[in-house]
Length: 254
Image (cartoon, rainbow, N blue to C red; front, side, top):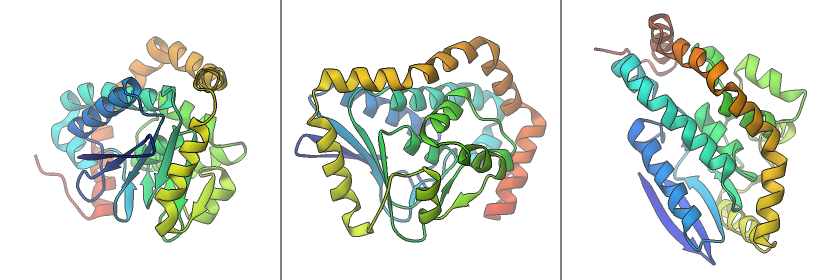
């Protein structure tokens, strides 16, 4: 699911979970563990990337429709923990977006301090509303922190997956890099941030993201139960199934 290497004190996590690095409960658990391990280690910084043409396609929608509400009751809290763990990661975190990054894959990239995307045919965006599901609060706050106005509402309401050039214009990514230089540039970017005093860096990051975390905490009991109820509803699962069939040509079978 994950390959770990190290370059000059920077840990590189390479996602290798199937063709699309789709988030299921097992993969999310592995990612959560990897972030925890890196946080406790002597690593100076972390780069997250993948192989091939896809960074991550987001939630494994086929698994969600197949296993239904009982699965989602366990999966969604684990996914939210992953997003929050990445967003709160105290060391420098760089996303080397090697290709398509959709939905949760886009959110994970946006949780990083810097986002570099490979020049090419890859697209990035958040089609949650096209799928028919609401954003968990932590996901929306990550996007709010990363994407400046007026681009954020357009991206969310349209569900559009944009090109690399548009992603740069919209603030979804910070740089567009030739694919053969992407990882080197990501490691160099992480190393440059890691050269800053670690305590001061962590405090600045905490201060910058404090308003987002305040909103996340406020929503835990007031909003999140309603969000999860919508995800688990039969009509939502049916909408997810129609989206999967429409976009992937796959029909869910129980």
